[in-house]
Image (cartoon, rainbow, N blue to C red; front, side):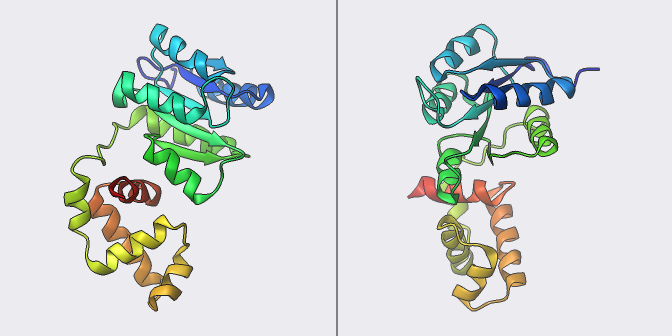
Length: 201
């Protein structure tokens, strides 16, 4: 039985034909229907004709870039269309945070692991969108002073060990603070927590 849900087409958008074909073949082997596109401007017209479940979207594209495509998809479809950024150029922590801040649901860096890509797409297709942007100020205000310090350092791209050294606490304590932050902000990942913090800024 196909793994895809209703409106289960996955758009694979990349101007690298080899990578685009590789991703499409992977997803089709997992039971999904795919549509391959190589130009950002073509995505919006294709989405109007056949609303996708997920768009696997390169950041660097001819026509509209991936960030612009994501913004337009959010304006037109809200959270009904999930967006997974994939990039071989925009790979820094701040790039990933920016992609999530613009409305993407997930972000992967090339080269991607095939199994991980399928797992992330499956999660996006089958998991309801988390409304982590609702009342972000109230959620951020619920953090303790130490939790805000940890979150601010995460937003700067610091790793757990670096945060521990900066705040003179143990890595285990940092991990505990991060778990509390995720719970209070009602998000699933550190990247989403950073996106919430950056929205307020």
